[in-house]
Length: 280
Image: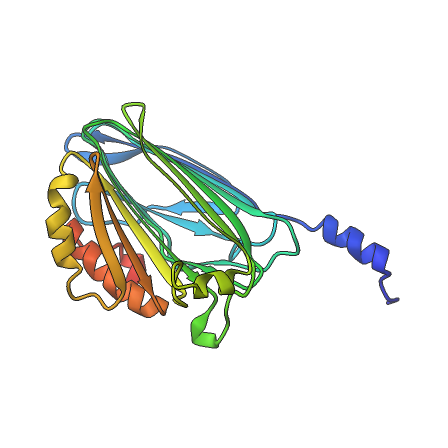
């Protein structure tokens, strides 16, 4: 086989196959239990519905592509109807690989009706060096709904001595309650990521971070409880509450410390074990 010319290599790189995936999931309550009423899957995303105790439903999202690479596009939409209870998890950490320029995109849209309960609990995202990822989250809630989310990010695989030296990550959150915007957050690290994380005012060299959001009628009333649950954490962490929303953030040197601290908090705050896939 002859050597590929530089022009041919650039052309092949520009036409590289990208992964796409889409999930549309909806659940509803009937006769005291939550039931699946709609599920559509396409591309590399699949949903599995394991048997769980209790009246709620659990969905495990599987990326059959084995990770996220440059130019990949994934879309997830889930709706919990009135009185329904849904937990969404992933079977493992999501790996985001290096990109030669194209941005990977993930869009998540979650809707919860009156009296509904939705917990968004994916396992951590691991960003490889030169990864490029943009994520957008849109959450629409009834004022009588309960919503909890947890997102953790690890910059590089510290256990293998790998760091994310450069790349891009941006997260955009918008949460609305009865149509009114109650939470807007934009997080962005781009360029020399390791140098930015090393700054004392950014992460002081720590490479793992996580955020838990809880939006519910009792969110502000649970602030002191949340702070008490953080007392034994080894991570840098804190909790605040306003406008019917509770936010908890962690910053740790490694993902093991963060998982231990955040996992302990989530179990006690939720009053129920984490999804089984978290321990597998």
